[in-house]
Length: 297
Image (cartoon, rainbow, N blue to C red):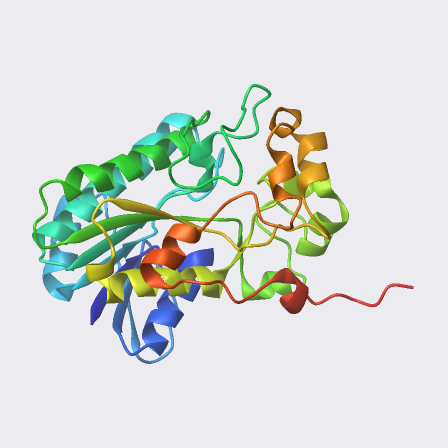
């Protein structure tokens, strides 16, 4: 299958491109700068906000599936108005182009930040958080991802031949980060485990980049199993915590105390059961097996 991946050289994108290519797909990775991919993966340079360049790219690649990862990747990395404009316009233009090009599947990256945690007033309706839980973004990045999800639903209402969906990858851990490299927040996974306050910012969630990539692959390979307009959480089933997360959660996010006991059995704060039920996706990589942990004296 011809698959176009936008933002393919990013932290998650590298794994998505690699996994799709390993499964036999003809993958084109598009970014604003050249990336040195191995033989068998095509690299394309394109400003996806440029209408003519975008049209030429879709005409040339004729994608049968599109994985849209491009955009401003973290909160507060750019001015709020820029984050909102870039992420929302990119999603509309790329997903609309996928439909117009005749792609059978188009899936966009969203984010768990749409739930709106990390404010003193945020109070979950229940735990764990599934895709039916209300969203309440409080910053421009989270709002941009909520708009991405609504874009998916909007286009799905009139797209007869293209199945559209969105995925909320958790705190993505790349291969080098399992080996001790610093994460996007400037500290290591080991440090996030040693200091629960660091992991509390993302409600102790994580997902291995390869596992998340496999969900994107399943979506583009099996569009008949995806109700168009669906949103999927993509989070490991256990928390980034050395033990059940209920006490940490109640202490560091006091407004969750009413529902935190539901996680005393070791479950994560987020549920990805929808992806398991629809597509059989089950993350295999846990920090307990993949984190390089030096011996402690």
